[in-house]
Length: 163
Image 1 (cartoon, rainbow, N blue to C red):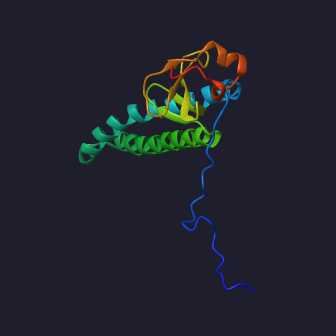
Image 2 (cartoon, rainbow, N blue to C red):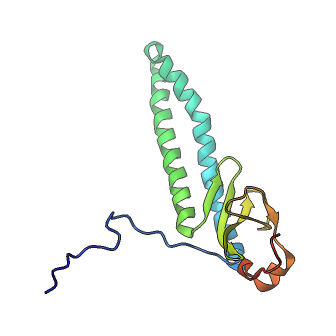
Image 3 (tube, rainbow, N blue to C red):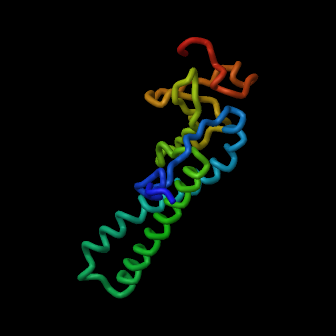
């Protein structure tokens, strides 16, 4: 029997997230599902943004509310909790797919990839009909996806210097 204690390689107990790198074809195939999930996330965010001011107003006036307004106050709390849960679920679904919701106001999503060995992402905004942009992870500006990436299906094969 070994004297070495049995320890998980990740002693903090946190699951290690596998680094995802998607090729262009895969990212484009995922787009209909991602579009649906992002729509759900943005709808939940809009509901929260609409309800929070009402909740704050009702909370400030809580001592003077008639019964119907008190009922509404409790209802708003429940509606916010439901919207927050829907938002969290949508974001978790996106993360489970390996993509990231970058901006939940505009619906910007990053699909991780590698370009010339550097961490990058295909970038998509809700309302765009296709995946047509990318950027390096340390940049914010979105660049058009070069036409030759469509032929190869992979950004990792791009060798045309620093675009």
